[in-house]
Image (cartoon, rainbow, N blue to C red; front, side, top):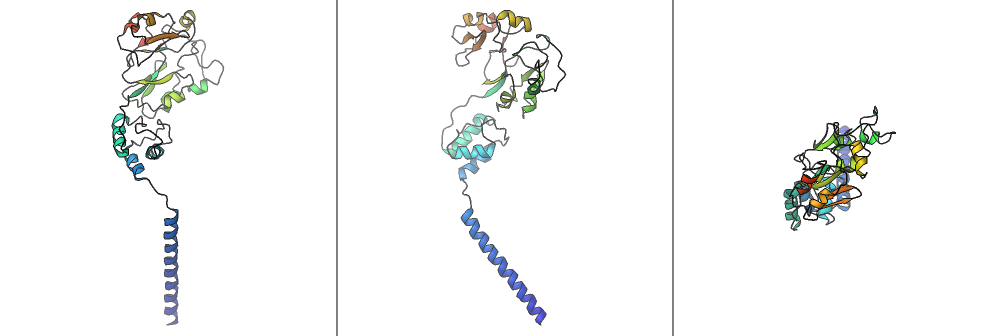
Length: 268
């Protein structure tokens, strides 16, 4: 009987201890609980979940919190685009502005057959690594694409690949997350409207004769494109042509007059 009484006493002590711990945990949980914004959860559910960081936040969770707190726009997700922006806008009770889809664009047309080499490079096959050694790669143009694929490795959407010595973007796969833009050590990649038809595939600020000494298809700053444009959309600044996409009427006059054919469509 004493044994049974001891067992019952032990069971009672364990049970009371468990009950006490449960009560203490319940009280602590109530006191320390973090209030979750219901809108934050709803916004997170409609975000794509790529966690690419293209929105400027650490991931989709961080963006959802920022949107719910009014710290980020409802169309801040570049991957989701207009459809996701519309859903987020409905959750937040805000009308989502029509967001223009963007894609990455590489400002270089210097393929292996068009640009010249100054030496041989046997270093790590990475653009950022090549920038840290004397010579910075094999191509003679100091502005052009190195072609070692740092942008390709950085892209989580398989939208950019090095082909024939330069990076090329698949505009249908690109979601404008911006990772390639940040990665490129030459700052050759920028985000442009998906609907862009004429862009300058060069970044060289050298004078015409120096450009031609390194690349057959570089911009020589001749100004013929600027003179051909009737809409004041093209200007030559520091020996390089720039096209203002907000003014461009896609008439193609600049491309037709360009002697080096460096003004091309996104898909070319």
